[in-house]
Amino acid sequence: MKSGKVGFTSIDDYIATFSNETQKILEELRATIKAAAPDATEKISYQMPTFFLRGNLVHFAALAHHIGFYPTPSGIEAFRDELSRYESSKGAIRFPIDRPLPLKLISKIVKFRAAENLKKAELKTGRKK
Picture 1 (tube, rainbow, N blue to C red):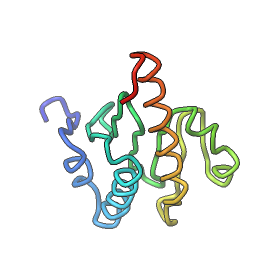
Picture 2: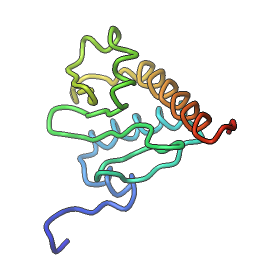
Picture 3: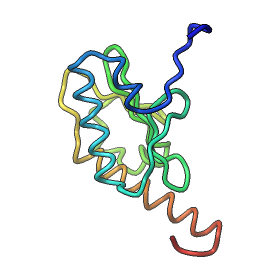
Picture 4: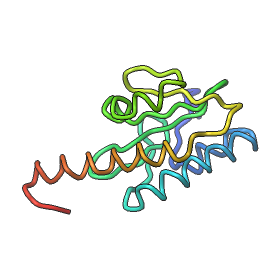
């Protein structure tokens, strides 16, 4: 792009920019998120792959030495003990790129976030989805 900044239009576009090894990891993560939140839609937000379900659900990104997973602070806090072996901050978890992703844990976090988003939407509109 002219500005020097990459503008992704889809998660496929984003994943295609990485090595084959990293693409496999990202596709595995994507499939896990889809299975845990089948009603969520995919989009790019903040130039990162994002799943959306009545609001942003989770984001992810590949970096040099880790996969960043962004389930909002509530998603991290709810699973603090299970996430204790990973580097994390208020809104991010860093999964080392050279180790298998904890897919069962990721699935649990995504399901938690989906329920949280649906509950917030229900409270906002006064009706269930």
